[in-house]
Length: 96
Image 1 (cartoon, helix red, strand yellow):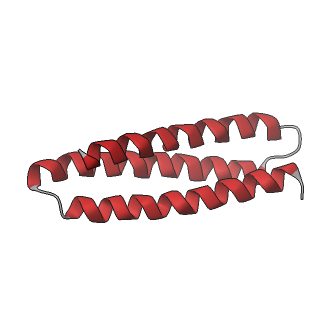
Image 2 (cartoon, rainbow, N blue to C red):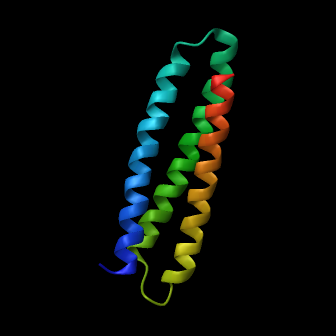
């Protein structure tokens, strides 16, 4: 399997996992008290935006030609790191 295929497969799987986690967090936010619900909703919106950014980067990664691939991988990795950090932050805030 090519290095590109490995990255695409890994990022695709991780994005599916994060989609499930975001959905679970959103479901939990719906059950929160009004004050907490506002904060949860903000965190969920941040996660959804970061998820969309990561999905765009994944699409670019899939479409990148050989010359641009390395720089696209760097951008994709940054989007992934941002989403991972946002997931961690949101999870911590929602659990509080």
